[in-house]
Image 1 (cartoon, helix red, strand yellow):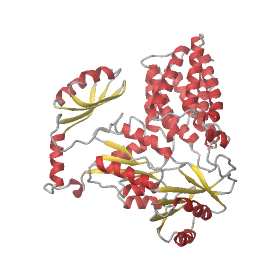
Image 2 (cartoon, rainbow, N blue to C red):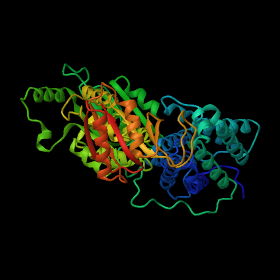
Image 3 (tube, rainbow, N blue to C red):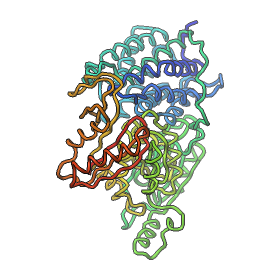
Length: 556
């Protein structure tokens, strides 16, 4: 039987149905890849993200819609994987914000929440691009709003949203030429359509499948993960006098927390004020000379957790003494160091190499296996440093890394250096100094990573006309900065072709990292050809062990 109002129990069923739909169609979504290589993972990421959101909703039938929506939002924030999963988590976050404190909503309330979901997702992306799942979400919310204004009920509003999403999805190739050339619609947009179709089945009373099964191993839920929402990146404090002495951080846990009211009471206590979170958990960060007053304000609204008060003037004095050699460095005794590093990496060779360069925590993952925000938070929290640099080493992990930086616990300052590959990370680590000034070290790592030129060599699994160079199934292609730039009948042929473009007279070092399907002898033979053709360059060979890509080439 179709439902007239969206309640907490029904929304939990909506999440289960949406997760099941994504799980059912994930390979279809994965196949919508503009690159003709077997590394599509959008469907997998979205399915895992929504499954994490569903598992966090609990099973109490008395939960209101507001309760379940907030739980789903927080589960998705921590469980988000890949760019598509992060954007979807922001949709759910905005939806929960749109629901507010309501016990249930009708069609008009659903349309308002969907509008807020779209607005939140757009704000979360620094440079929104039309022709993506953002466009599809907007198509859904706009159509839902038109239906609600016409007096449609809950089912009719969601039907309109699904139809609006489908229409927007069909237009994505017109908005993004790369999709048209590849002959596909946007994968994230297709995933959002499938999720909404599952939701519609639940609201119609047609969903009868079992809820998604848990992931292998122990799921990290928002209630178990360290920290809450978000840590900020405030500038380092110079070694001069500090206007506001105490860096004060804490969490406030309660119900219906008024974030703006808390912020208003704290704003005159100092500077660098941050008050963020949700109606059940708020994070406060402020530099003040009266930390007791800040804590007192917090206790009026709820229970305090993870209280941290640091004397910044004293910290600066110790830092200055260490710089002059007058005080021992605690890192030398196995204690906290100033800056630590987390890296996402796939392949045993890469893991060993990055660990040898000083990476503290390695998170297994990369293309086709994107880690969740919760996995990254866990790694960040395990680093023995208050300043942590995260190297995502994949374009599709950058969003999750930034979300993890926001979710990390108090007292932790997280910097994301948006490395595209593990080879970028190697270059970044050349500029890493665990006891340096973060304001110098982090930009130095970013600049070092940008200086290297990277090419990835892999085999095409289908024909593609998306780039200037036509690609046939079975060809080996070289991908540089998101474009196919060379084609060859063998991996080595494609590698040499792209090096002729990348390695000019100014090049000094060429690094060859071979994958798990390439023999050491084949890699050595390629390196010999590279040395013959680029005699002015030093050539290094490493066994990276990465899947999918036969070779990763780095030119400096």
